[in-house]
Length: 376
Image (cartoon, rainbow, N blue to C red; front, side, top):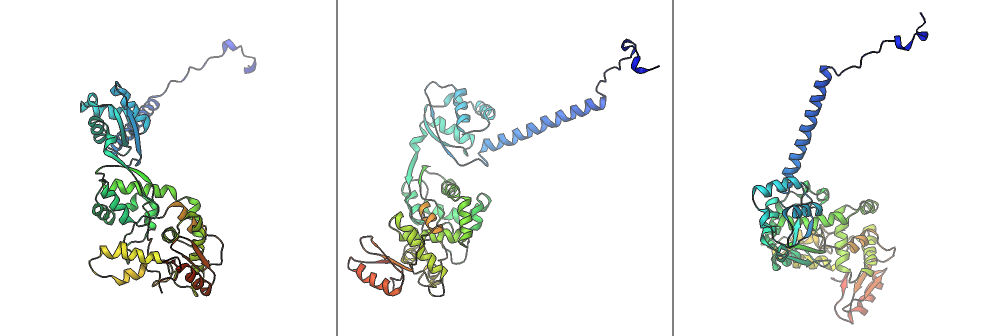
């Protein structure tokens, strides 16, 4: 009989298949595994959030209004990025019976604070009263930065030095691996405490203080800048070292490109000009190295002194700003091999030694001169 001509009503319908026991078990196992993974991830994230581990170092100002409920305050903490796990914080604060003690005020918190630190801050009152804003001008040395931090009550200078000597910052910052250590280098992180305006807690730990500066430095150095360093045949540390000299030698941003060109021209013509002869490197030795050493270390002094060493000094001589860094990477195109400034801050540039010495005689009429080849 032709099946195509068979009456549809005579056709038997196949019963719908029900999931087999194996399929149901697999679905159950998949569900259990999925829930387990979710709970594990939630637990891990909650643990990190609870203790402020692996959280971004970011200062956040929040305002707790009078009459806000604990739920509203916790929502505010979550919305502003102070915490990432709202439920975990709510449960933890509830166990401590602390939410009812939160006080209204303006608070400067940090996303890497532990729950206990956040709770204490909100119970203390206006936490912003325990903070201070400090501006660090471009060109400050690490010594000057540390002294200012101690003067303002943030942290002691020696505590900061000690932390920098022992901290393993390579794990947090990739660029730190590019910074040489040991040898004749005096302060490894000179040049990398980016000058800017920062808010600090009074009595803040050297670890968090350091993170403020290094986070900022890391954000300022772009991939384009790294590419330009490669084009200029400079390492990161060489670029920052050169920028520090440009920063210290330049009285204004408009001169930085030309000052940088002098150093680049000498580096590119090292046979004729093996030494950069920059006064500021001598100043750094006398002001920032010698007073901190109990024994004389002439080898270290000479490694920084560009009238003694060939090429760049062993490390930066200040903490340069972004304009000096850009000038070091993008110098003006000149034929200058000398520059100097007179007592009024006027710059003189020269292509030859004879022109330079003539400029030096003219500049000396206004007082003391500084620049290249002025220490002879």
